[in-house]
Length: 111
Length: 111
DNA sequence: CGGAATCCAAAAAGATACTG
DNA sequence: CAGTATCTTTTTGGATTCCG
Image 1 (cartoon, each protein chain N blue to C red):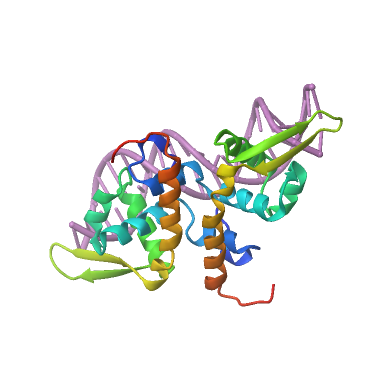
Image 2 (image 1 turned 180 degrees about the horizontal axis):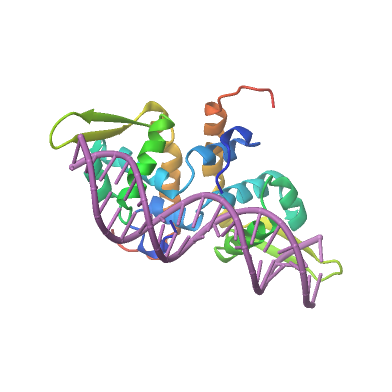
């Protein structure tokens, strides 16, 4: 399932190679919705994600320049994450996904 | 990584639970670009996908009503796949993904 | 030709413990 | 608190074979 982004024939495949998996989309979306957040906040805002997955995905997102990481050298440590401009450019896609999810959810319940 | 769509708090997560993974997005996109296609055509149009993956994903997409399957009872068999209306409703998302991929691909080469 | 089933290898993900 | 490392389990994917 993991491709090399460079050998992707079509642009959709390229995008999916960069933002592949479910967690990354979700992390980006939560960073957009709730703004700059610390590691712990982010974890609390994303149900079911494990410690390992979150830190791993955050590292990869940072490598792709989709998010930025700001570390305060304190005890106890404090690290804030934020979307970069490149990360923000993915938001329209996520808004459509959110819309589609709303429209197609089987249960219509007042949220 | 596999969630139950029903227990997804947010709409983005719901969408990703339905259209999760990389192959599904790509299959839908290829069905849109090239129109109704037989199994073999589809396979040829999606680089790297294996027999097992394609048939597996097609079955799941059909269960979600995103694609339709039309079987001709002939020898040799012929089966055509097409997007449903629900499937087509995902196209705007894929167009944005395609756009984003174009904009962010490192190599600018005349395709 | 389309696809189901099997077996096996590889990768992803969870739990847990440890560190600055 | 944030992050790393290790170990184990689960999931995914590939190759192959058989069937309508």
